Image (cartoon, rainbow, N blue to C red; front, side):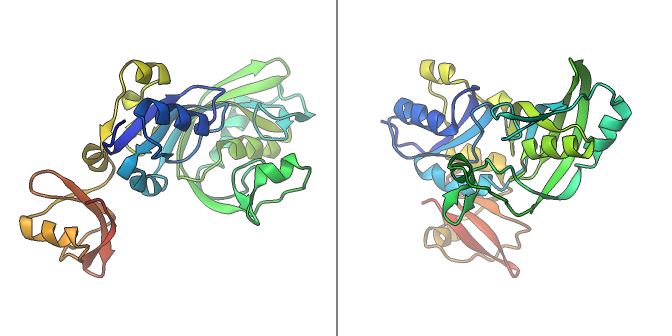
Length: 288
């Protein structure tokens, strides 16, 4: 059983829920204290960041970071879930759409958006997940919420029968639904659309280059120590012994921080996350 704190960056396979990945890692690590920084739908693959033991307290901050994805959108078919796991609700030939018009439609999805999440999502409505209400036959209408798509590149457009398959790569804020982009572009073009493939390529600084498959973790369990994880994700402040002692007591520091930062003791030990507080710095989460 490991008591070490750190992150496990998993390359999630398709067909397995994020909770299923957590269960597998709990068994491999021999600890119940495992959480994740943002779920991936079962059909999606790619980067899923898990925290072990004390590092689970980092996850809430990592969920607020940018994420990048590669995705394929099918134009000409709408589904109940806005992805390939739902039932088809409408089919409209899309082969007549020229590539320039398709690219222009995707370009409208870049910037600060008011996005309506898919009704089949994990968002809670009066205490219950939206997808559970839909499954029980309820009509669910979710309010639009602000998201930011920093960049979206169309990397390929190709025919698929009467439909068009469009490959995209995007970088967006946490909380952005890529399948909602597929839905909205399809609606704007008048043919409907849904997501047929989704691969998350990065969560903040953690990308596929540091991710491991579950099979690889079975052979050799790879844990990114909490100090290295914090150095990768946050601005770093090296403290002297006096300031480090103040941190251990949760005191404010005379530090003019610009944003949430990781503070370290002189020996390299990760101590805490501190945030700006009127020219000073106050503790957000202390890990010692």
